[in-house]
Length: 28
Image 1 (cartoon, rainbow, N blue to C red):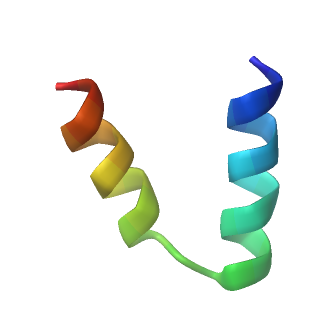
Image 2: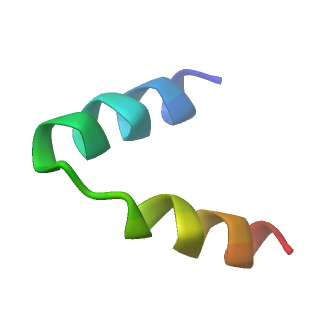
C-alpha cells in the first residue's frame, strides 16, 4: 500500500515511532 509507504517516509522525517504504535492499536 502506498499509504504505508507515505506513512513510513513521514515517520522517518518526523522521527516518530509512537505513530506505528497507534497504527498497530488502530488495526487491532
